[in-house]
Image (cartoon, rainbow, N blue to C red; front, side, top):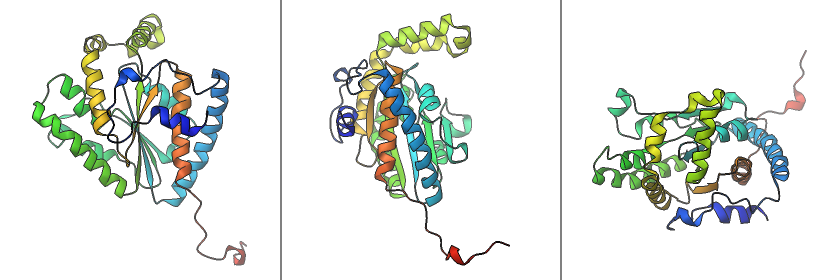
Length: 272
């Protein structure tokens, strides 16, 4: 199976209706084994480091990677493993929590725009502006007529970023409800993971179906040619990392990055 097969299996085609029931979070069909995946991931991490260096040297474009998932879906783990080879000087990770008082006094995209990576950099969003059509919708934090308008507002915002040379990749890390239960249980049993557990997570878990419906609308309405959504089977962490790494490297390869040519004839320069 090649890259086209992977992309075909995870890409939400613009204009298509996403039904998460059609995506198996257990799927590992496109990689022959965990060992083969780990070999590919190691190669992709090395390649990603070189591509980042060229992106930084060119200083013409930036890359924005958006990670969304249900609680315990693996956002932190994806950042830790897939991005492990990146140079911190050219990488910015932003985690979006409950808006501060200042952020709440602005439009919902204000804090997002502030965090968009500068030219030459790779930005990673752990959660994002999509929370404003997810948690806001599920918990009725704003009227329906307000959050319904946000899909088009998000698409226009991402279109603007794309026109300003921001390459956008959006990943929904898709786990099953049973897998979430197992991961919550691990957090309870492992003292080194106790800090990750919150009783609020259990309250959110009760709203699982509401969140699935909200995600389906977000994925359907906001997967565009300039900012596509990818649904990543994420029950198996190694397959999740493999799929995300493959997709990021393939996207950066398609940019035809290169190191800038020297502006002067370096052969005539002598260092004394």
